[in-house]
Image (cartoon, rainbow, N blue to C red; front, top):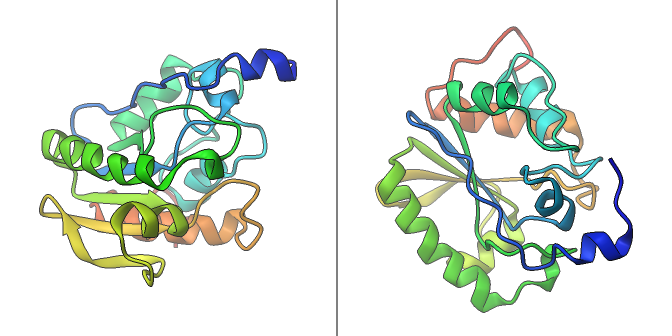
Length: 194
């Protein structure tokens, strides 16, 4: 499946529903959906995004997920059965996360509090330190477990899987995601999660 630039632009500001099932223990929080994600209706769908390869390498899932053409029911069920849920700080799709305003990210924090109160995961993992710093008003925050919680739930900040985040590899992302998953009580599959 491919899209022209004009076709992708037509998905600007589209909302992508959360993927959260019963028994969610690890709530992954992206910054916002990209245009490709909005077009196919699947989180982290852009080819080159390292989210699903990192989940596999971490041992959180037992097979590679390719959401670039949308997510299959089997892949959706795999995530839900492993206790992984996905939401975003800002719900509207943009070409790049830097198109969001600070007000949108701060509003996302309030929405996230509501989602966490409703879902009650064990761990919330925000993907992206810059967005976290803005949304939560913590300019010196570092990646890792945060001192504060959210609705009584452990709060982690882990690296963003976007290809634009050149400081991280699939292997380093996998290590961070495995650590958050273990904190959420997810038993890692195989030896990948270390």
